[in-house]
Each structure stands twice: as structure tokens, then as C-alpha cells.
Image 1: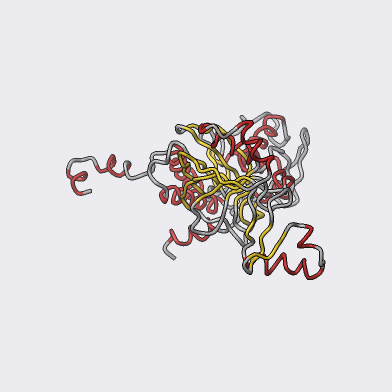
Image 2: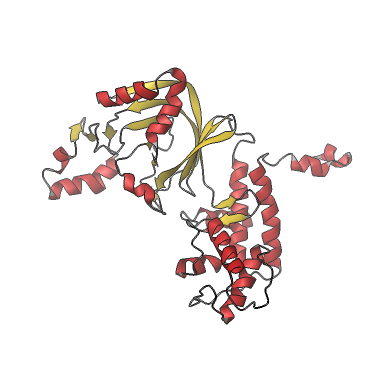
Length: 351
């Protein structure tokens, strides 16, 4: 630092300390924008009973225009600014696309609650996400599987390019999926499930006490003093488990509960990560060594448990993003389900 300062290159030296990802740079620019919004007093709250329809006039329309313009330039001011016209409706849909699970563009209670989150809270979220970026390696592996517990989504990267995305079920608030780096070194077909003691004690055994046939119907047996569920369609691990070094005891696997992937809110598990398209992912991992396609289908159909080691282990990066960056540089915010943003903001403030 002293050398950079002496040579007049302090700014360039400091810039090189930051992560190289374009998303990080976009978040840094967003931080400046939101800091300016906070310094100017933030944005006004919208009335909690505000209900607007296309073509209708009302004092709340002006408040909505001001609120959307605080984060985005929005549509040009029309001749009748108190009327909810189509450009304003489109601006609301665009805002909802960035900040909500669906681009509804409807001013319901959930949308109003999101619009009324204070600017200072949004700034703190951006800063928390910047901090989590700084926890990562400066250069991520070009071939990797990323699991984002904030958005409950996954993505497979090859040579630095995203080639597949899918939904994921991650840990519930009580059992958050931790952040960690690891690698997938094998694929287990038709895996049995060794039930964790806590789940056995708190969930499965109480059900068995009320229903004597529960264990047998669901394929549970006692093995060395612990419950194990046999492979099959009822197995909690589904048809495929992805072997990884897991310091926290959480795993990546299939699930028989396919309907849960259609839910907007997918923070539902005991900490493990359930994959929406496990067979597709297994095929992508095994095809390079000749174990995908029809051979994978035949191995699964055989019904026996087998582990296939990956000739090239794949990096696994479990991250937690609550701020998304669009290609145009606009940012959108997810709910801070785990409360990690608030805790991190407090830590960064030094309080």
C-alpha cells in the first residue's frame, strides 16, 4: 500500500483487492446509488390500503410514480400524472420482476410491503451481499455447481459459462443451509437414507408411535441402532445422491416430493439441498465418462445401490444472495429469510 501510495497508484491498487466478478462491480455501483437515496431522505411510504387499477385516477398514483422513480427513472411524466396509465403499469411490472417471485404488477399487500421496505434496509442488503462476495475466492472455478440459498436456485457452469439452471429446496429458517465450498466426487444411484438422530427422534419415531405400520410401509429398518430407509420411490433421498465432502452434514440429492419445486418459497428442508432436475444433473456429470444416457437409465432401473466416482470432481459453491443484478445493472431484492443480512449489517456497522 505504501508503495502504491508513493507511486500515485493507490486507487488502482485498492481496486485490485476487490473480487473480479462483474456482479460485484455492479453491486458496488448500486451501493453508491442507494447510499445517495438514503442521504437524500429515502423514499416515501405508500398507504397500506392503496389499491390501483389501470386507467383509474387517484392521489396514490402520484405517490407510486415517486416511489418507482426513486430506484429507476421510470416512464416520462404524462399529461395526467394522477392516472395509472400503461407505461406506469409496465414500470411496476418491471419493478416486480426484479423484486418479486412473479411479474404480477399488482398492488397487493405483499407488493406494498416490499415497496415500503426503507431505503436504508436495501442499502444494508447491498452491503451484506458485497461482503459475502469478499468471502469467496477471487476467481471461482470455471467448472462448478453453484447453489444459491437466498433464491433457492442452482446453476451448473462449464468453462465459466452457465449451462443449466434449476430450482432447489434449501434449509428452512430453523435449519438454514450453511455457506461452504466443497466438491462433488461421486454420484450414488438408488441411495439408502441414514436418518439423522434428530429427525428420527423428533419426526419419524413419533409418527411410528401413533401408527404401528408406518416404519414398514415407508421402508424404515433399524440398523446398528439407527434408522435407515431403503432405496426406492419413497426414499427421502430419491433416486440420486451427489456425494460431496460436507463439513456441516448437509447433502445434495433428489426427493420424491416433486410438487414442492412449484412453490415460490422453497426454504423447507432440514438443511440439505434437494435438486429439481437430479437425473439431468447426474447425466451431465456422468456423460463425459460414458456413464450417462441409456446406461444411467439402466443402472437406475436395476434398483441396486451403486456409487459412481467422478473422474473429474466438480467444485461445489454454496452461496447466499439476496440482491440480484439484471443485465442492465438494475438490482432487485429477495426476502432476508434467514435474517443473515440484518446480522451482517449490524456486524459491519461495528455495533
